[in-house]
Length: 352
Image (cartoon, rainbow, N blue to C red; front, side, top):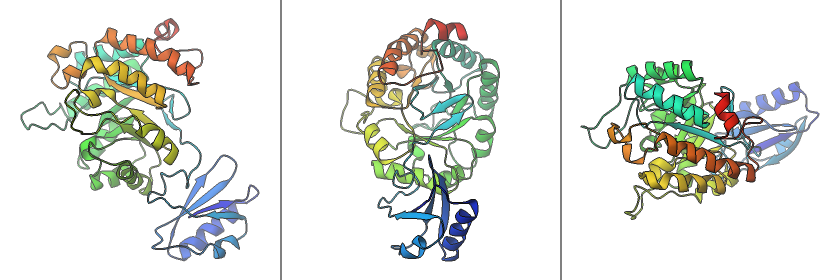
């Protein structure tokens, strides 16, 4: 249930409503809206009679929330959530580009790629320090060494860092370095990890599980918000189907549905969806057209030598081309980038 306060409601009115709700054994979650404050009622085990709330000073109306996911729902929070990472805003109508290698392999490799993607117009740098791999014999990442390299990348390029935490035992290490902590598709329902992310002050990028329904995905996000962290970015990365022409099937229909159901920003990762370099640029264009708040793509200057996912990584010149192609699309869909700067434009290049 969502309690909507009058515009004229005072701080004392709001505090009083919170106290009354909590006195009945529920949780009260204040939600700042555009013009007025709302208060969400959580942890009720059945329907809540709205009459006792409506009689409280400052209360305008009480709205039932029908979705199983409460905090991520637009019923609870009608306005779009905008997440700030450094000087980048995600979810405000701009198009955000995250780029970098699947895994950090060396300092030289990470810095070389970071310089390339920054010049082309990327806003954040992605790179795996800890890698979940299907085979126990595959490259598992450099771990703490990679985190130190990522810190150097941010210091030199100014790009905020996105990297994955595999489980709650390494979350503290990742959180110290990352500007955005990623929870990967394989961990979407790792509830211990989700609860740890809920106690974090850092934004979390939550990927959709490869066999997850939209409701399951949003419920996973609910774990994080319920824990107290409202800074969640959703990421569609493809689902497992019977297709054999790509690694997974990119479910772009999820983007408009999620935007309708939830206030959280949503990105698209075409690289992990298709697993093939030649499909990344077309799928990126499609992601922009369907209304995604941004894309996350893999880039490697020597993909044939990559220790992880080289086949789906763009060459730097291909990434440059991608940025140039999506720039007019971003303008077409009224997605302003940095004032006066367009992804891949000469001015963007000069600004680096």
